[in-house]
Length: 133
Image 1 (cartoon, rainbow, N blue to C red):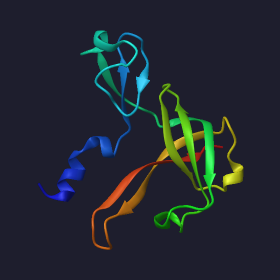
Image 2 (image 1 turned 120 degrees about the horizontal axis):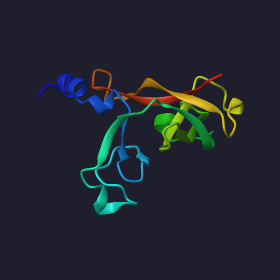
Image 3 (image 1 turned 90 degrees about the vertical axis):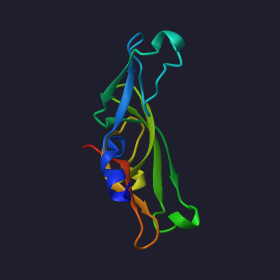
């Protein structure tokens, strides 16, 4: 299969899907086949849901001295975000100065370039987050 076709057909790379337990209603991201709380009872009862990508900052840290591959991005902020649906996710906060981020800040996911394999290689895309005013 051609690389471009592989990326186009892999919907989870372009959408934020999670799973919701049909028993306890807890939402997980990334999606999983079994709820760690309900265990075997949840097998076959995990519902695929599309997440809104909106949430709030629970915790964050600003990196001032990154690895060599990330030196052009410093300073950058990584946060734990609690999505509206309840799942918690780690992501980079972009398009703002690090000192404008606070605990409880509202954010939404944005689709961005994450990197590429060489100058003419495969470009990798994924989610990051930006502040909502």
